[in-house]
Amino acid sequence: MSNQNEKQIELVNGQIIGIILFILTLIVSVIIAYNEKLLRENKSGLFSNKDALNISLINRIVVVILGIYFVYDAYERRRVSNSYDDPNSNLQILASWLALIASAIIVYIIVNNYKNVNFDVSEIEEPTL
Image (tube, rainbow, N blue to C red; front, top):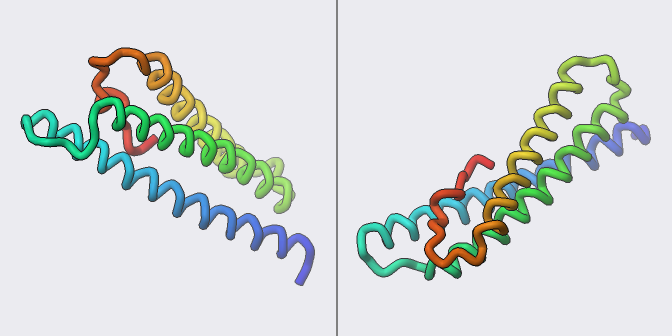
C-alpha cells in the first residue's frame, strides 16, 4: 500500500469520526429544541434556561472544533491528491471555511448573550450549523 493511499485512508477515518461527532451535536440540538418546546407549553423542561445555554455553548464549541478539523481535512485531501487546480477541491475548502465561520458566529452570539438571564436558547439553536 502506498504512502498516499495510507494517508487517504487516514483522512477518511478521521472524516467518519467527525461525521459521527457532528451527528451527536445534531442530537443535542434536537434535545435543546425539545426542551424549549416543553418550556413554551408551560411544562417542566428537561433543563433550566441556564443549563440549556451551557449545553448549547459546549455543543457549539464542539461544532467549531469539528469545523476546524473539516477545513484541515479539505486542505489535506487536496494536498494528498495533488489537485490544486481542481475547482471542486477549491469549492470544498470554501464550503468548509463558510461552515466554520457560521459556527463561530453562533458561538459568539451565545457567549455575547451568556449573562442575559432572559435569553432564549431557541433564538440561536440552529441544528444545521
